[in-house]
Image (cartoon, rainbow, N blue to C red; front, side):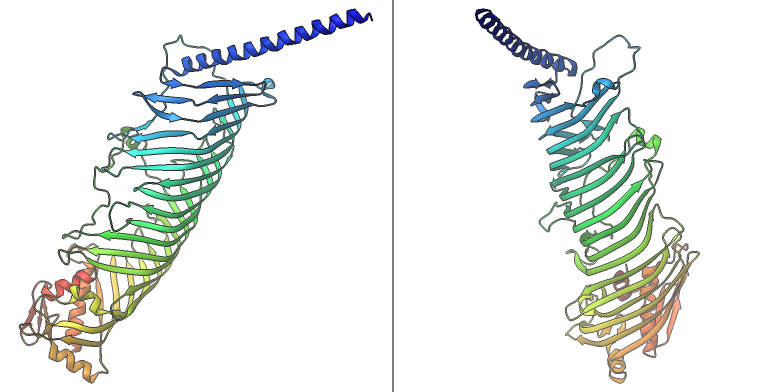
Length: 528
């Protein structure tokens, strides 16, 4: 080949390549602007995107956002879409991966109960299309460091929570939904006064039937942290496995539900009603919810609570609510269901009741049917410190209790709403503090008789009684009957004659406890 011709050929070829490269660069830039404009036009005036770049197998969308009233309500730092290698050989759209970096979105519930998603796409009036929408398949969706803000306008402040550092991986997602499992992993951090803590979860989800098979772990969870005393409830860790064939027709099955060091604080008013930790409007069902029904059957197999704590602030006793504290709560139950079923639940329970001079230990085991309340169980209470229960035992003007311990054993049986419970009571080392102007009585019984019985019976008062009645009888109340039987049993153990006339108890010597009596009324509150 002529050297001059070869030189010219090389120069011409280089020029052609340069022109092609420049054309590609110009066309890519032009196509990016065209895609950007078309995307903003398709998603409406509320959508904005900073820029778009694409290569032969991927598209990168930078800073897409949705606006509402001029404010950003949904945003992502970057979205990366990669085409599936065989996308041209399949109908519809096939995406190998979709990565969302630092997305954020707001989710709200209006006062009417309507759920509102911050993303709104304007729909333009178009002629009806006869073609079916093309299917979409995404092999993998990844969310990195996402944020979700939630607010429920039906409640007063605080009524919001935020999920931060959301990291999600979802495999095999398709539209229309298919009845195939989509595997997922999830990690997030909850922040706010409504709820806080960290969550991890993994498993499979069926988008078509809404079936699930997941494992869940929550750590350092806190709920309703609305006062200076701390959250209403918290738990060091909660874990379970949940399965369901579909929602809402199919039941939820929870297995191996474990709560480690849960804490609950409850407070009642002067009437004994529990005070809500979140004052505000009670959430109402929407019309759609009422129409389809929201009752979902939930079944729990193998419930375990370890190291639990309950603080009950009793507002019935005094203007300043009196704290009753239960610690080291341990519970094992083989089965629970909501709504309750006829099936029996076998359980074991242990609770500590800290006092000024001792720690009482309450244990119970047996079985109960939560729907019918049929029960066969044993209850035991040992070394309950009576001085910690003065507001329930000592009324104004009576002698004070300086020392005393209570043991109690109950064989509890409930069948067809009839309760039968033989009870054994031991009062130990009871001592009093007398004072000028105070009546020399304890629970309406002369102190001298009680002291004499203690001195002659190894510092113990022992008696038995039987609690029985119908739970369907509106005049029968367990707490009132239990307190009444307690006082009558104590009086009889001291050799006193007792006459019952309706709700009035007359003790030998003229002492009368009218209704349930003043002393008996206070004792009654102990068993509520």
